[in-house]
Image 1 (cartoon, rainbow, N blue to C red):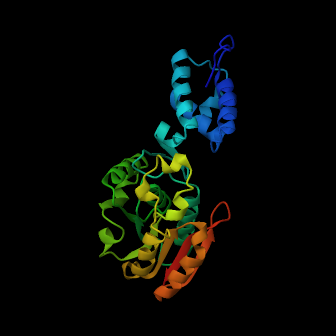
Image 2: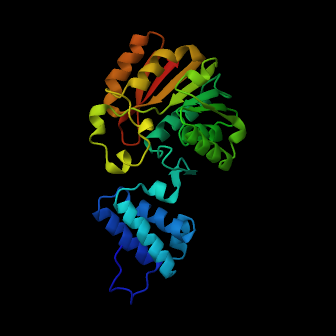
Image 3: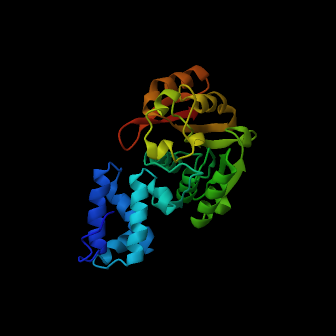
Length: 295
């Protein structure tokens, strides 16, 4: 943010928001207004709403310098969520860092499906849920908060990711109903009987990896993103091997790339153990969430 020659004008919250939103937009940063709000509220130590309650508050020289540095890092494609250490998700604010994937809006479709299904379906009122590859804990925590009688097992191969998820569960008041286990895919839940097995596994193929945006490729954990040559490495294992872990009735609910829809349906049908495999559209109307019933 260049302010030389303009310091005779006071840099208020209003002016910083307007200038930086335009600047980030011109640099091709996604959601420039939200990014600006997150950065400025972080520097000022206030909630985003407070920015609009006191728009004429002048920024100090130190605040401007700190804000300028963060804006420059954002323009260089460092994720804003990592810069502020927080990410908004499903009406929560979660701690995030380079050990965990930044939660995306598409994952909220998975959560909304499970919540509504549990509320309306007999036998699912107090489910045992496994969230495989929990990362920041976003899915596990959202389900625990919104399905009051649920219990959740949250697994991840990365111990640093589990540490982040534990902190988030404590902050959201659901740590007493989530058990965190370290291990690869289905290994930590090998002897469980679940109502739901949910996962947002790595699913970017080797071919697609070349075109991934630098703010993702250069900063988010590759372990949580790349899904092998065709992107289906972990999805294939979950579809083929998860059925013995699910009760009857039960459900397998997986997030995947929109391009995977035909392969997902074929894999579920070929497994021969799933009823009614279908794919739900996310908030962008892209087919992203595979749902399979365990009858």
